[in-house]
Length: 232
Length: 131
Image (cartoon, rainbow over all chains, first blue to last red; front, side, top):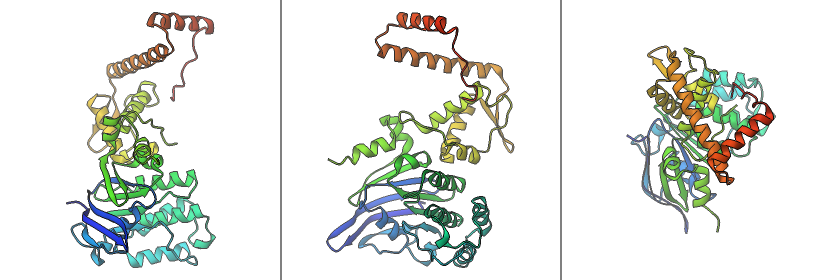
């Protein structure tokens, strides 16, 4: 059974259609790139999967269930913008995640934070942007979830932090779980991906294994994306 | 250091070739144990499924073998390694010839040109064994 399934999923904001009849299945064990230009519907899709928005019509199922308390146990979400309180220390954050999520592996998070030499007494507001992003990703990836939804995990950080974040995703790979990464930094994430979903104006343009794109078209996902989304 | 990939071939095929070259060049020794799939994938900066695909391919070709619990090992058979070395050599030569053809050299001219280069330089320096 797919861990994430969209059936005719539509979302309208007033007169604007953000998602238009999306059908999509994501299987466990897959790392999937959700790729599209700004305003294509990536974040809307991820927010509906998290129950932060409700569909106008159609539905989204997480492990066969509509978003709700039960699915929040299965989904680990990295939002595009930070939601962690500035005044919190690393230790408080660990406590907070442990309280909230049964599947939070505190030891795993603490080990990763120790590797980065981030003291547990440090507060969010004392961290650089790159460090904040890394800490946030560590917290999200330290849950033993079935579905990780990462909205722009590498946007706005330097290349070294980017490598660290990508390695954290690889290092936490779980064949029982799917990872969906929304980004427009395609060349950076491409070696991580099993499949890509191209989305534009709320429509799925393609959902294809990365190997197939390279084998049948003889080009990288990055090159294909530039062609299919060329600004005329 | 993450591995670099070009756009023309699937990443698993590029990983397979890279590991073949590591074995042929001796960067990975006969009988040596390979890193676990996860840590090898981390080293390369790739999806573990892709690394597994490359390792399966190498195992099919006999260049590595897996022991159920202990992991993957480089073959001890010098003939298998020599055969892969030979096929990588043929591929390297084809690349050279293709490049020379693009520059307008016939195969015979390319051969003569290579000889002349070797004479003027007294042989080329040995490639970095670490790749």
